[in-house]
Structures are given as structure tokens and as C-alpha cells.
Length: 349
Length: 137
Image (cartoon, rainbow over all chains, first blue to last red; front, side, top):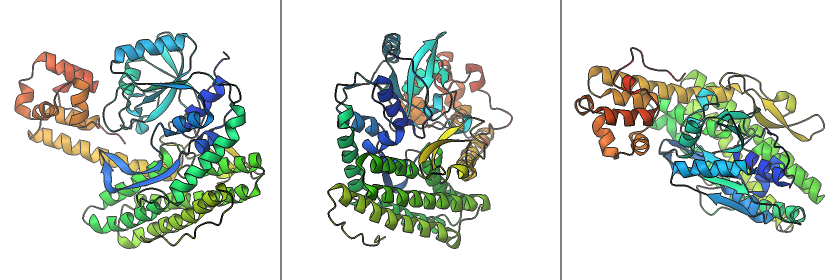
């Protein structure tokens, strides 16, 4: 097996998936991993928080990208959870000694090599263990530009952290790349496109997909009124949206740029210029998301929360909801063979 | 976003870099390392300020004698009683019981050691309230 090279990525899970497959012998870029794995999504749940975590998400369920990419490519994998930290440690040691690249689900709270301010209790961070030196694990954390090291105790705590999405020692790896996998990539890309087009553009449930952005706009509009006496609370809720969009490692604008990169790749691979046009529109949507974050940041610095101040931010979200709904419906229709896109009515919210 | 527009504002990344995707001069997407963006720093700051306010409130409560020092250490680590209960292998209700000053003062060394391990704070420091509350800012 060849030596492992650490690769900087925008997002932890797509980065880990791309690295694992590339190392196993199938060249796969991060945008492709995100696109095939249908990692772009939008969720807004009807409450302010979920056990201390924000109720807004720009991603699909943690673990989905790796699962979908390997299923769609037909690559055999192993996913293992442990009850006993001792056994989890011994197995990891055995695997790493055998030269296997192992990915782990961890809590950022316990990973001491990360910048201090990012170590909040979040349980679905993915990292790769690629070796062991002087009793410390060699860690390839895709969201950092440098490889890192981690001691046994911290890693064990990170793998067995409690709370929402508890990793329960989850470890996963690619067993081998079967012959002919490379020929299945195109098909897998089309499957990823179809799924994202449907879940974003046609989701029948208002808490998921592009429609949910309109739902977020509606909730956001109500915050200054609901927290009239404590503006910090309204600002904190808005800040959580921006953090989910930018801070947790999305490549900018809540995966939109990463997805635009994927669409550009699709346009070249399929030789279909329609995808290049869609890619440009996703870039424009991403720029609007950045504008939203910028406008929100001005609110944070002002420290005030009134309906008038929130209005432009809410308006940006409404526009994004309509724009994304139209776009993903077109993507879905184009992916299903150029049938006419169902007209996207303006979001009812 | 264009490659030359990728923000390099620094601050909370402590000199480390993260990946961002942007289009280069020829219109192709590439990965550009970024040192951080001030808008996301502003958002993180709001969250850190909220954590800070929580720690200060806990500090005041302990000082007043309404809660045990465990309450302060939980806030300072940003952990809930449920999480610590799982790490220490205790019932949640028991952890809550120990956030009361009386029961906490009567706690044996063995139990204190369990909390020390769960919170990663030396056992000796657990029963002490620092002069000034810890800050995440």
C-alpha cells in the first residue's frame, strides 16, 4: 500500500470519504464525494434547538455521505461500533498496524489539536487515523491544512462522547476497490444528482429541502418579537444559522460552492453544458448566502434585534428559498431526462 | 466567490487554515485555503458570549451558596448534567443532587475522583470556586 498523504478538504465527511477511496485506489475528488453522496441538504426543524444544538442544518444526516458514495459505487466497506473503549482501542491498533486507513466519528470537544473556540460539544466530526508514532495516533483531520497527533485518552473520550448523535465508537473503512468501479462513477453521479434534486426541490415535508429555507425565514422573522426583552437570544439563534452555514466547515455558503464545483465537474464528465449553467446559478445562490451571513454579522456587531433590523435578512432568506426551489426542480427534471420542470410556486410561507 | 475574494481574516482559527471553494480566473472551481472570515467570527463570538454569560451566572450562583462548585465546573466545561452522568457512570438525578451545596460537601473521595475523571479537572480543584469565572472568549 502506498504512503498516505494528508489532504485539506472543506468538509469533514466528504473529505474523509474522498481520502479513503483515493487511498484505496479510486481517485475521487471532494466535490464528487459530496455530489455522489447527496450531502447537500437543508433542514429546519420546528424548534429553536435540539439538546443544545441548533435546529438548522445544511447537510444530510452524518454518515450518509460515506454510506451513499460506497453503496452507489458498489465498494465494500465495514462500519463498526463498540461498547467497550478498551476493545475499540485494541481493534484500531490492530487495523492501523495492518496498514488499514480507518475513519472515526468523534466529538470535536475532546480533540485537543483543534483551535480552542471550535471545540464545542458536537459529536459528528469525522477524522482519519493513518498511523501511530511514539504512542500517539497520527490523525488526518480533513478540515485542517496540516496532519495532527492525538493521545489515547483524548481520542477515546472523543469516540465515546455522550449527547446528540453520540458516536458510540464508530469506526469505518474501505475494504477494497472492486474491478470496474471506475466505470460506475458516472452512474453514481447521476444517482446523486437525482436524489439531491428531489430532496431539495420536491420534498413533501416542509422542514426539509429548499422550502424549509422559507420556513427558516418565517421563524427568523418572529425572533425579534419573541425575544423583545432579550435581543441577545434572537441574535444567538441567528448566529447559530450562520455558524452552521460557515463555521463547521462547508467550503463556504453552506456547501453551495462545493456543490457548484460538483456541477461543473458533471458538466465536463457528461459533456452537458446545461449543468455548467446550473453550476453558475448555484454559485450566485452561494454568493447570496454569503451576503446573508454578512448582513447577519452586522446585526451581531450592533447587538440590537428589532423586526426592522431583521427584515433585510429575512428577505434574503425568502429569496434564497424561491431561487433554490426553482433551481433544484430544474436539476431534478434535467436529471430525469429533460422532462419539463414542475413550476415552482413562490414559497407559501 | 472568486479565489482572490476568499477572506483571510484570521482570529479564531489560531493561524491554522481551512478549505474554501472558489472560482479561479478561468472560471474553474478550486480549493483555496482560508484563515477565517470575520462574519463567521462574529457569529462564533455571539455563541461564545452566550456561553460566557452562562458561566458567569453559574459562578454567581455558587458564590451565593445556592449551588455547589460542581455546578460552576459543569458550566465552565459547557457540559450538561446528562452528559456528565454518562461520563461518570451515574444517574442523572444523582448528578443533579450533587449540584446542591450540602450533598456535595459530604461527598467521598472516590466519588470526587469519578467526577474529576469525567470533567478532566484535578480532584483537588473540583471543590474550589475560582476567584474569577473562566472565559471562553
